[in-house]
Image (tube, rainbow, N blue to C red; front, side, top):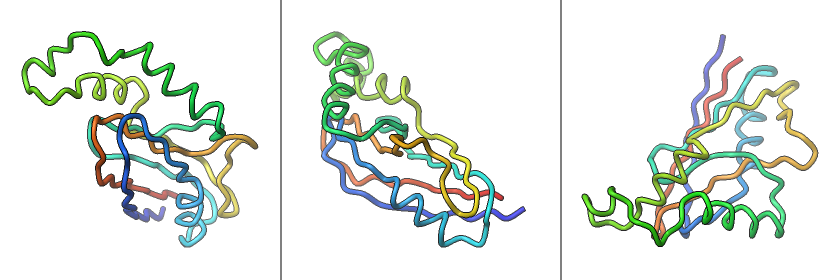
Amino acid sequence: MAVITTTLAFESKGRGHMRDITAEVQQAVSAGNVNEGIVTVFVPGSTASITTIEYEPGLEKDFPRAMERIAPPDIHYDHDARWGDGNGMSHVRASVVGPGIVVPFKDKVLLLGTWQQIVLVDFDTRPRQRKVIIQILG
C-alpha cells in the first residue's frame, strides 16, 4: 500500500468563509502514483472544518445561517470567558462539522456526487492562514 501526503495552504477570511478545494484535492490524487484508494482531507486546528456541499450561491448563504442557529454568536461561551478570544462559537461550529473527510477514488478520479464539492470552512473570528493535509492511500 502506498501513502502520499501533501499539504496545501490557503488564506481565509474567517467568519464562516467557505472555499471550494475540490480541484486542489483532485490535482493531488491525479499527480500521485495510486490509481485507486481513498484520500483523507484534514484541516489541523479547532476552528475550521472540511466537509462536502453543493458549492453554489444559495448554499453559501444557507450554510452560515444554519451555523448561526446551531452556535449563535451572541450567547455565553465559557471558552470566551476563560481565554477572552471571543471564538467559542468557532470551536463549537468546527467540532459539529468536523476536521476532515475521506473520499474514495478510482482511476485517479474522486468519486464525488455530481453536485458535491469538498470545502474548507473557516469558522474563526478573524482571517487566518490555513493548512490542509491531503493523504492518499491505495
